Amino acid sequence: MTDQIVIPDTSAPKTVPVDERGEQSRWLLFYRRNGRALNAFLTFMLVWAFFASNNPTLFLIPGYYNAFLFSVPATIIITTALVFVIVSGELDLAFPSVMGASGGMFMSLVLLDIPILPAAAITMAGGALIGLLIGAVVVYGKISSLVATLGLNFFIVGLVNLIAQGRNIESRESVGTLGYRFFTGRWALGDTGILIPNHFIIALIWVAFCYVLFTYHRFGRRVQLVGDNPDSARQMGINIDRIRVGVFVFSGLAAALCGVILVQTANMVWFPTSGKAYLLIALAAVFVGGTPTWGGVGTIFGAFFGALTITLIPSGAVGAGFAGFWTDFMFGMVIILTMIAHRFSGARVR
Amino acid sequence: MVAAGEPIVEMRNIVKRFGSVEALSGVSMKVRKGEVLGLLGDNGAGKSTLVKTLAGVHDPDEGEIFVKGQLVSPWTPLAARNAGIETVFQDRALAPQHSIVTNIFMGREITNTFGLIRVQRQVAEANRLMREIGFTSKVFNPDSTVGHLSGGERQGVAIARALYNNADVIVLDEPTTSLSLTETQKVFRFVEAVKESGRTVVFIGHNIYHVYDIADRFFVIDRGREAFEGPKAAFRGADHLIEMMHQLAETGSADVSHLQATT
Image 1 (cartoon, rainbow over the protein chains, first blue to last red):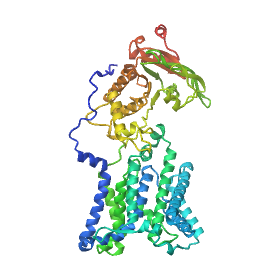
Image 2 (cartoon, helix red, strand yellow):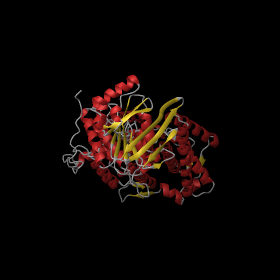
Image 3 (cartoon, helix red, strand yellow):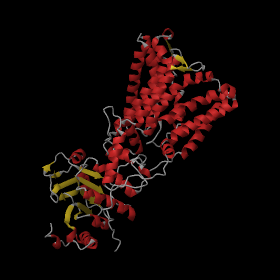
Image 4 (cartoon, rainbow over the protein chains, first blue to last red):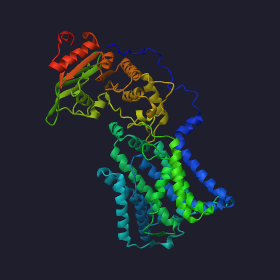
């Protein structure tokens, strides 16, 4: 046998820069890193342009967007939190029930004469606790998160209904208090006619927080690594069970914040069905936002634009003059088309 | 401090059982500082059990492990790591969708007190580690995605990561398996660089040609026992080593008379 391998000369200078490529432009690099978020942004602009071209006069009135700004924050908050869950390789179908339960918890606290801000803080802690329980069932019960959270969603909704006996909870007298205005007060943006609601600003702060947590914090980084290759993560000393429970805690916390906001935007009325409508909307927003289904990678800003797109479709369709029953058709079309578009921003690397 | 050529890791009479199966029946192995030790053995000989024991994954049922002359007990993955032994397993434990630098710092990110990652420092460290083993190229940098690298380059990421803790001993489990000739040469270059830096390498493989070319000394196990060991000079070439291993497989023992003087 003569196929012996010659060891190459290793005395070559080792001071060669690690990357000498000059031809890789900064823009290409930017697209490579943020392609998914950029595609989500383009989707939003295209959907908007499509609607606006059908009824330009309406879509150019700034005041037209006030209702949009009022309804979009809850979707933004839950969508960005779900990115962590999806990226970690899990799925959370129980967040609508946490939204509902937290709304009820919040209203019960308000009826006990607890001011709105402390009540909101306690509710968020409660939401995180429910998330912890959900995460513990998934991770330590070793059940697929799809099935476990599907079951838990029914279970929690049922439990809430049993406790509430199907009744609404109202506290009209809290409307207009300081805490209420903290969440739902609006600010005129100059004389444009745009009213920025406080909870929209809260949502923007939340997105910034999620972005830092996801991209620059140890927790977010580990969520990505666990989702990419759990066996590698475990071998390198990452406590993958703790990370997995952590994403459910985070999703519970976000769902509780959404529950609080939903109740307040409904003039301090809680319905037992609160939150239910967000299940498919928020999940669709995550995927339209460019986070792939396979885990390991995702984008917070993409999810933000995904939430904007999904929220724009129903009101935008009506504004553009389409009859209301076009909405689902357009949802479907946007989801399918963006999924195809995201194929170009990167297939899975193994 | 252990002088070059002195034992840095010493395993004494290691016995490891899995139920009624005795995978290792009293193996004693010395790893000497600064050498590349080639660990050879047929499938099922106990190679991977020995490697996992060295890495701390298995705590031996009997026997002792000394590192730099000190008995280390209990023997866990963390204990092995703290003692300066880093292991690169066959599957390399990489996250292919992430960058080289993220992979190098997987599970031990450099962070500030708030847990925020110090990106610049990690990139600088990654650059330093990659240069140290000659893992440089015009087509990738620390921010490149690991999934776009070749098999040999991925091995480079894993080896660079193993160096991060200033490990004294790097254990490479089948690093060239399923790699092409060029990729194998890349891995050899990394191993040479690790050796030049004064570190010790334990190189496991079942391609004897690969191991023969890179190693200074060989340790062959067979059916859970040490079969023979010796420096490269004691063999007339890879074919001689293969001949001895054939002999071992067929008759259960090999002619080791030429090794007596050297070990």
